[in-house]
Image (spheres, rainbow, N blue to C red):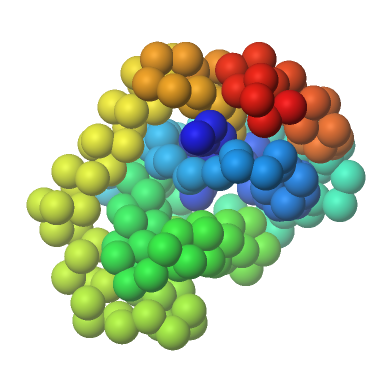
Length: 213
């Protein structure tokens, strides 16, 4: 059966901007098409404070998203209250660690990270913040803390990043429709309208699975 892969990073600002439209996309998928979430990973672990140039670039990116996607807002207090680091792998591992306690916590942890980062001025590059979020989701925080930086979690992240790379993904968010073992098609992300993406999925599914048309 066809699988629509959503490749993302929980600290990717454009992924945050795409969240509402992604929900509409998932709800409107043709029967038989499954959405699967895959972590791409933006920035490896780092204890170095983000450079002023990088801070300015990301703030500008937030402004672009607010201008592009109706209803999306950012809390710029983050830049005053936190010490930002260019480090998103911890947040990616947090999604994997949460997922171990139930598949539903993959999306729930992603949304919690986005809410903390973009609306509450909390830093998801910090393990302490991620563990707090796990507690707020009702997870077993002791189990979560053990899993967060375990070799198994790190290996799982590497595997998902390699899978995304094998699909030709170089930016986030990205969508790939897998039809069979070999046929993988890019679906162009539209931040404002869901129908163009749904139309692309329908056409590809009908092409590969004519009996389902």
